[in-house]
Length: 213
Image (cartoon, rainbow, N blue to C red; front, side):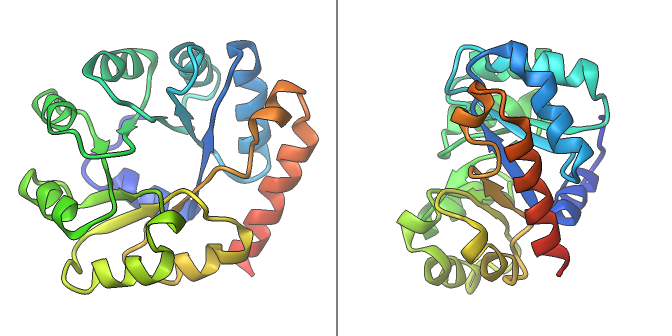
């Protein structure tokens, strides 16, 4: 998916939730993407918390060319290269590493770095980035912290991740600067490992129903 300008952000804003997923075996990747796409969430953030991440991204991209696919928990420039080569649309990192961010900017690779303080937001803005991951969301003060950050920095766009769940999702989404939320509960690693696609499909359908209610 070759998204220009802010089209990818607007697509995320339409979906409202980005499933955040750790895949331990790349053989599970396509079935996982199928469970997400067919039930209403054609998007996935595949985290580099496992060695299967790059191969999983490659297989999903090949099987589902139109899915929104990003690489998460990217900590190094080598991982950026692996993710982009595999077919990731953009990069997501848990923090703001200037080396990684500048590497992506130099190569015209979209990146959403993680922030959880005013200083980090200002650092991101200084680098020309306004689409940011608020992480870890709940542990960093949750909704109150998020509202405090968007006061002085009204132009930023945020993806809260970490502790977001169905019970507080709509509260996060009600904040105008929130593009979407990272959903780690949608496709748990254990469900993927057990090939429990029906549980994942049910989670997707329920979250889509909640968002549209």
